[in-house]
Length: 286
Image (cartoon, rainbow, N blue to C red; front, side, top):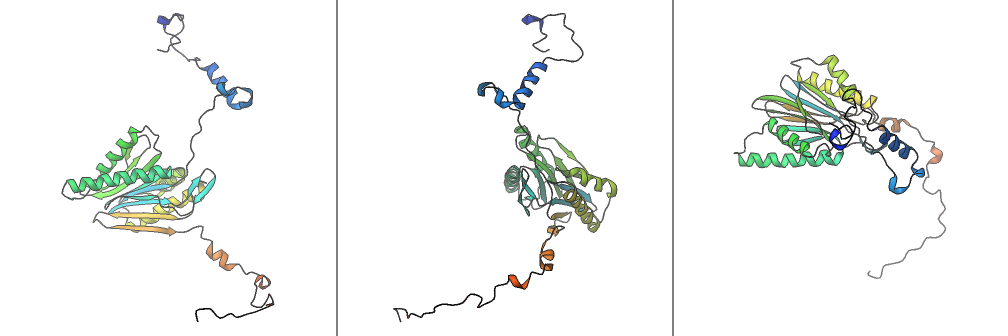
């Protein structure tokens, strides 16, 4: 029960208990007024609404016949500025487990580094056997839930262990889901459209990699926060891993630059500037 309708503190007990609540109407109007006209209010009474941090990424993953395929774009943004055109968003967790990260770059980097270290210590303490994917998922979700979403790391975790291939999506608040295919990041809707149209069970590896690349390209071309190149990671049930760094470069500019023919008048040849004086001095040492 709200304090505005609690009869114990002297508020009218006959007030209706159901329907809409307008308790915060005046408060919200004041916040909106102070936010729209910050000069009209004093510094001590000024209210500023917090702004959400906007991040951009497209990360995907799917389960195929003999393992897992993960994919990510390579654009890193700082507000509306492209900070890095070729960053790595597929992070190492264990020899048989990798993780794609979306959100704040520092959070995804350090979160995966921390869990990777914990997984290695666990392997050392348990005889050095193969890590379980569900163990990495549990460690990640517990850490993210502990920080209540303030660690901005949205993850796609994939790997193969003795129980087969596993794919998890992990949200920044700690909720998780085990799925045959998933997408995350600002370009996730465009990538999911490709998956929902063409994904099927028991895909061959070549078809799975091609589908992941198409999904990432959908994010690259339809989301301003995603761009540059396409990275892939294939994790097979036999324990082997194939990293496809910059497998596709849809925005490669080198061929365009090579095709430009500059005017020969812009080239400064030897002898263009006259030599006015030339001297030779023998060194003192010899």
